[in-house]
Image (cartoon, rainbow, N blue to C red; front, side, top):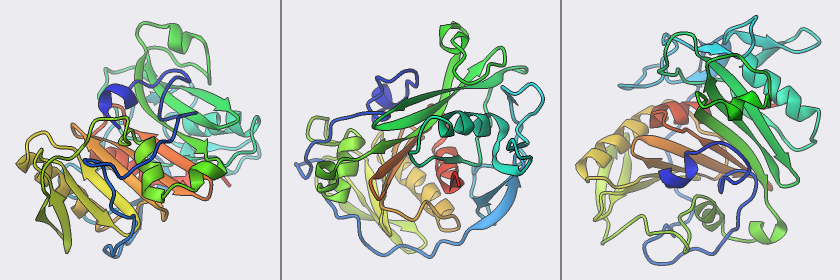
Length: 309
């Protein structure tokens, strides 16, 4: 999940969304710890965020996502980020722009769909809009949200043609083949997250135990990378200076002590305070990529994830 590869969010060429090659795992310098181990009890608390019910910690840690932050205008001219309505008039848990994009995909695929019900604020000038594009293939789908100077409907060509468009956040699904699923779960997630043998190692040296709070102990490596496990999830803050990465890991641990990630084997990778989140359910490998959003906001997107029923 290196930022130079995962953060651009236009087109089907993304390694992380809609197609990738899965390699082996377990080489020196890469994660090889099984996706098992005890984790803290996670308790979800529902709060109103942009009109949708989303899990959130009852006591937010510093710099945690906040329901009081401002929102940019969505691509729907008649709504902001209030709940969308379906054609039958029932309320949707998703924001209007996300609901419209899910409806576009639902009309074209039988693959499982889902999305965060909480979308982070954007530090953008007044008057910018969130405009969506969606990609679909036999191997999966992807939703990309872009910041634009004008409101556009789903997949309007002007979104990618405008020089003012800014890529923001994205998420999607890859359908795994039986041979890919035969790979060890963590190995599959490693390869998908660009931490497999064809990518640079994310750890160096012999790890040292480091307390991260709430009973969690992580492993601190020579390059400053911190890795720990919570239930079936492996979490990593990639090294950029040792102590600062421990502090960042402690912030995430504190947040996840009161909020629940999806209940599946998963991997969180934080690079320069932004995160990518991947989890595996059945043959479906879901991914959320935060662009340049803070890591806590990306985790909160994952916490608020809801499958489209």
